[in-house]
Structures are given as C-alpha cells and as structure tokens.
Image 1 (cartoon, helix red, strand yellow):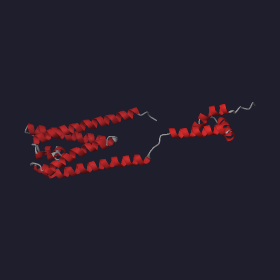
Image 2: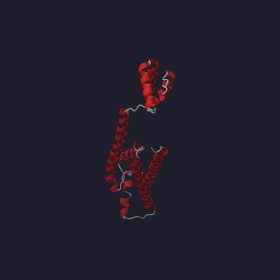
Image 3: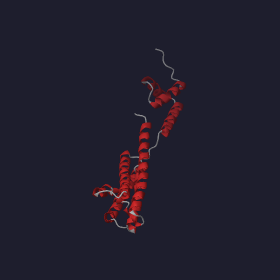
Image 4: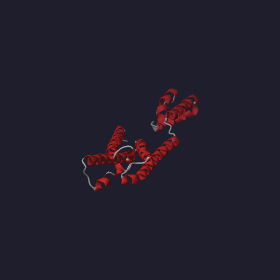
Length: 213
C-alpha cells in the first residue's frame, strides 16, 4: 500500500476538522503523529485551539445569579407591599367613609408596586398569567361596581365580588367619591390588563421563534 504523504499542507488542511473533532480515526492519527514532529504545525494547532476558546460564549454565572436574585427580590418585595397596602385599606373600605392620608399613600403604593410586579415577572409566563388574571378581576370588579352605583342597583354579594377593587383603591376616597374611585380603578386596571396581555403575547412569540432542539 502506498504511504500517504503527510506534508504540512495536508496536515494544515486537516487541522480544522481535527480541532472540531469530526475527522476520521486515520486522519486523527496522521495529524497527531505529525504534530509531534513539526513545531510549526504544532504552533498553528495551538493558535487554532486558542481561537476556538475565544469564540465560545462566556457565561458569567455570578452575574446571572445576581440578576435572578434581584428579580426574585423585586417580586417578593412587590407582593409584600401589595398585601400590606390591602391590609391597611381593609377596615376603611369596609366602613365606606372618606380615606385618610395614610390610606391614600397605601393606594399609591399598591398602584406603583403592582407596576413593579408586572415588570419583574415579565419573563415568567406563569406569573404573567397570574398578573393577567388579577388585573382582569380588578378591572371587571371596578366596572361592575361603577355600573351598580350608576344604576342604583346591586346586592350584598356585590361587595364581596368587588373587594379586590374597593379595598386597594379605597385610598382614592381621600379626595374622590366612590363613583370617581371606581372609574379611576377601572382605568388603572385596564392598563395593567393591557400590559399583561402584551407581555404574555411577547413570551409566546419568543417561544415560537426559538427552534426546537
């Protein structure tokens, strides 16, 4: 059998396949035998290996961890403030009279931190769905309560059905009547609902754009 010429030109043609690990066993053996003897080709191989390493994406695990931790902290903090604001306004909403400055501040906190929650969960489909459901309940509750007041109708269960609107937005009663409070709550809840729908559609689009493995 005629012996294969293992000159530098042949080896250099084989090096990219060797580096990628896709050459045959016979070619691999030829390259490795040549690299032992040829310093020039060995330097080229080392340079190619270094270049491959440079081209690999570098994952900063600490940065990813800090980002995930900060996002989780924002979600927990937002939920804690939302629950606290709800608790502050619960008694006043039950009594139905004008709100205090503290209750108004609680409502502002509820509105702001619900926005923070929407921003923090924008990459988590389950939490975005939760935001969508809660926003829809708040919007429907505000709209239903406003209709009941304008038509002078309703029954005892209406208070329970609209609790997720009347309690957190009760602070607006510091300077607004109930009709105006429910109208403002409906507008704000509609904004949250629209944002949640946009985020959910974006997540679905991103999932479709990613090719299946």
